[in-house]
Length: 110
Image: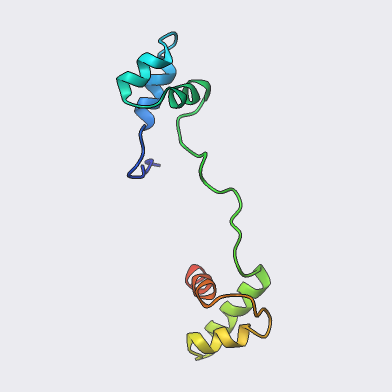
């Protein structure tokens, strides 16, 4: 799978491989060569992988529980209710959920 870089990425897989293969070259020389901080060079020298998976969340906390999500999706699919009507019927179960969180839940599960 091809890695996707965000627009503010300072390094990519190729630069990280060069940093890891540099061996005894100092962090300061590599930071000047690639225009990155010494701490970044040190981080990638100590890693044994080159993909940046540090920032990805491991667990995503959704506003609706799995039961509430299944209920909302089944109501939406089995009736001709508009979005707001489905949202209002779900408020009986959980009145703390917001309209936008409910919308994202339906979009994610459609």
